[in-house]
Image (cartoon, rainbow, N blue to C red; front, side, top):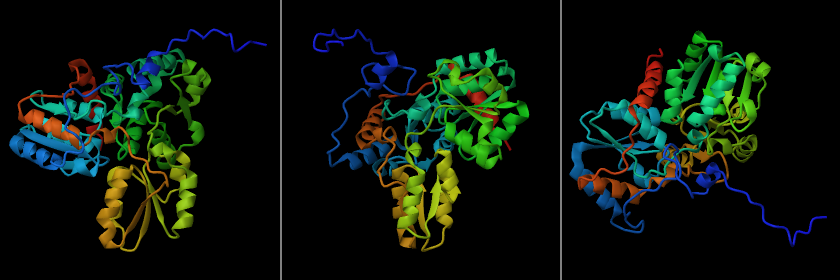
Length: 395
């Protein structure tokens, strides 16, 4: 028996990924592990709202502020437009006169805005550490290795990549280079239909749940038509035969917020609120989507609640900032809106964009200092834009 009192410590060196997750290293190609330079104002400063308003007024039409639906109320109040990630990127592209695009969202969204705007415009992210855990789950190196696995299995020439908007510019570029397209949660079905017109199989990146739900729920495929590629296992944890038999090769990625909802959450809210309508985002697990009454994108959720009759009850499975904002908005119309899960769950990276970061950003720009600019290199932009343009061309 080993004497644990005299055993020598193991010489185990942490991996680069482990150090990154611990915040002890930085990776310029990752959406995590970076810090925001400069001195931020104190979050307790009672003048923050007035300072943000003054800086924004000083900048005038030179600045255009975009606010994603999942942003805090304290930030969203300064947005010129609100929406989901792709709507905001298109809104930015439609404002070529704006010198600065301040994107209150996360890193991949700011990248998409930079791809779609002119070289004369600067896209700014108030906190560079505002990343996306889902986008982080597929790196360029991992996806290139996956393509090698598909090639060795003899199926790569049959595969069309379809990448969710919630992916890095590198992944969008890979998609464009390999003949694929981008999709949003609103047009995922049409994107898959297009892809199946081009090839026999789809590699869906990086959200397994949106890919599975679209294929099975919206397109009538079976769960057996889908396989899950795990980038942390040799050959993705799949055999060549599994890859040859599959129609949908799903990347093992997910949204940390939407992945929390469970069938138990649905059952619990139905027991507590008889007659409730359960409305969830398609990034939720397949069993949750199957148990819900309605499924749709963020924009779909908003429109559904706008059209809902007075007195109706709704449990919403999406990010809490948006649910709470909608509950307050429709309270006067006697619509009862609750968060699907009992556990409070904000998107932690979205919430990195707070009022102190926004004030620092706007005041810096007003003083002529360009901070936290997000720039996609020309080669990556070329192929990422190609993939985005294929999506825009979808009927």
